[in-house]
Image (cartoon, rainbow, N blue to C red; front, top):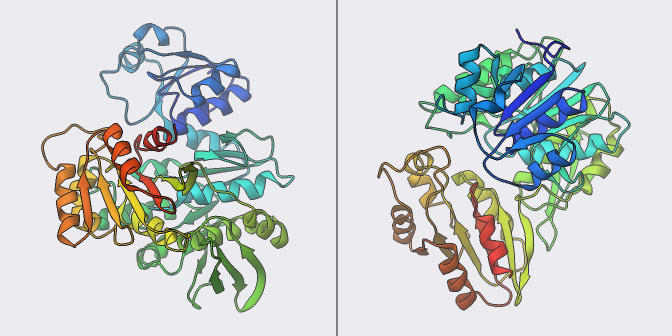
Length: 456
C-alpha cells in the first residue's frame, strides 16, 4: 500500500479547489512534499493554496502530470480526465482523495472521525474549535469553513487528527479512526446506495473498522444507529436526549433568539451547562457528540463546555449573510428533507413575521427518490420558492423537475412557486418580503449566491 515517504516527493491533486482535496494539499505541502493541482475555478481555497506556494493549473491537461510521483483524485473525476488518463497510462500511482486521507490518518497516534447523514460539518467544526483552543495542536479537515479558524483546514504538529467521514460511495471505509462518531443514519445518496439497508450495512463495515482499543460514540436516540452498533468491537458510548443515553442533554430551554441552553448529564451526574450560539434542537445533538469526543481525547469538561458555548457556527450553516431593508437573509447548506425541517424548525424561535424559503434541490436522483419527503419538509415556511435543480455530478434525463416539487408543496396548502433564475427570485423577494421577514437560501449548490445578490 502507498505510504507517505521520501520517494513519493511530488503529488498532483485533481480538483484541488474542492473542500476535501484542498485540505489534503495543505497537509502534504506542510510536510515538505511538492504539491501541484488542477481545478477549473478560482476560489478563496485556491487563492489560499497559491499563497502557500502550491502550483495550481486552471485547466485539465495531460502534461500537468508528466513530472509527478502520485496523482490524487476525487470520485467525481472521470476516467476521461486527461490528467488521470495520462497518469494511468504511464503507471503513475493514482489514489482517491479518501484513500489519501486514510494514509495521512495513519501517520497520527490518535484519529477522530465524524460520520452520519447530517451534521458532520457542524460537529467537526465544533470539535475543531474546542481542540484548536487547547495545547493539543491538532490537524483538522473540515467540510466547510469554520469562522473561528478562518479556514476549512488546520495543519498542526500534535499527535491528533480530526476529520469528517462521508459515507457517499463508501469513502469512509478508507479510514480506520481510533474514535468514531456516528451522528445519525438516514436514506440519502440513493444514486449510489440501493436503499436504507445498504446504507446501514456500509455503516456496519465502517464501525467494525474501529479498533478494539478505540471507542464508538453514537446517537442513542437514533434507531438506525442503535441497529448497527452491534458491529462495534470497541467500547460504545451513547449520547442523546433520552435517559437511556450515557450522555444526556437535560433541562433544555431556548432563548428568544432560538439558541439552546441545556445541561449535560453523565449517568445521572451533572457535568456541564451549555449555552449554544447556534440555533435548533439538532445542534443539541451535534454539541453533545462534540462534547463527548472532545473530552474523550483529554479536553477538560469545563474547557469543552466553554468553547462549545462560544462556537459561532460553520459557513453556510444557518449563516446570517446580512440584512437589507429590515429583511434578514440566512443561508444554509440543508439539502435533505430532514435537514430542511431541522433548519426551519430552528428558525421558528428566531423573531420574525414571515419566513420565505428559497430551496435549490441538489441532484436529480435525490430530488426524485425523496420527492414525497421534500414536499412536506417546508411546513414552517410561509412562502416556498423552488429554483432549478443543481445537477452536481449528474445529467438531466427528464426524471424530475423543480416544478414537480413546487406543485407537490402547493397541494399541502402551502404557497409555493417555481422560479428559475436567481435574478427573478431576487426581484420577487424585493417586491414581497418586508421588514421583519426572514429569507432563507437553502441547498448544497450555489444558492448562496442569491443572498449576495439580494444584499447588493
